[in-house]
Every structure is written in C-alpha cells, then in structure tokens.
Image (cartoon, rainbow, N blue to C red; front, top):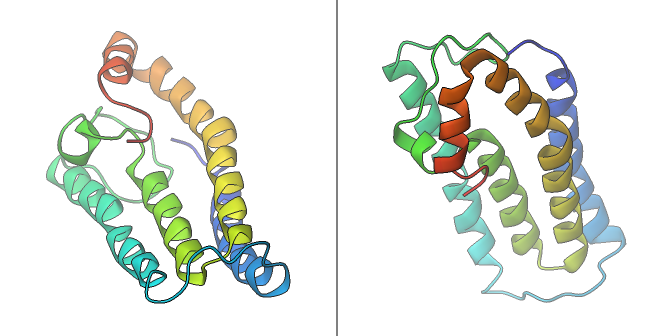
Amino acid sequence: MKEYKHKYLSAIYLGSIILIFISHFNFPIILFFKRPYTLIGSLIILFSAAPILLAGRELRKNGITTKSFTDSEVLIASGIFRITRNPAYVSMVLFLAGESIFLGSLTPLIVTMIFGAVINYFFIPIEEKILSKRFGTEYFIYTKEVRRWI
C-alpha cells in the first residue's frame, strides 16, 4: 500500500497516547476502576503486542517485508490474519484500552473509542478499497470469512 495517508497514523496514535494521560489527569470524568483492578490494564497492554508480533511473523513467513506502506503482492489469510484483517490496528486499540483501564477513569476510554472510530471510518476503508482492486474476488471472499477487527 502506498503512503496515501499513513503518514498521519503515527502522529494520531502517539497523540492519542498522550491525550489519554492529559485527559485523565486534567478531566477525569468518572473513576470507575481502582487498584488492584487497574492492573488489568497492564495485562492488556502486554497482550496488545501479540497481534502485531504475530502479523509480522506471518508476513515474514510468506516472504513479505514488514516495511510499512509497501505494495502487497500476496493476500495473506493465514495465522493471525484468519482472526482479524487488521492486527496492527487491533494492537493499537488494545494498547490504548489497556492504558485507559490502567488509569481508571472514563475520559481516557473516550479517547480510545474516538481513535478506534477514526481508524475504522477513515483508514481501513481506504486500505480495503486498494486491496479490493488489487486482489478482486479473492479479497471479497476473505472479507466475508474474516472480520475487520476480531
């Protein structure tokens, strides 16, 4: 995939991580998790690395570079890609959700939901359009068999 709009993704993700802290410490709406329950967020943060690591392994196994934004030559539908079409985005949202739960207030979860919505409505549709053009019926069948998220 070409670098059509992904140049903003890292900034949006990093901005979300920072905004979660700022919103929690400046505008904590409701403290709904308290220690030791906030430690669940730590486990989610640790688990959030799994989808992206498994995706990288699957791409390397199929001879595809993990360098971002390159054109796809092969549609990968094995490994983690049998569970989700977007393991990198799943990792990002899990990390933000874990961070939000760790902090324990509602405001960070709102930031996480907004980030997920931006990915879902602005980034993924562009990628799906490119993949649909490139792989045609094969990609259409894949989208019917594998969910966008989980």
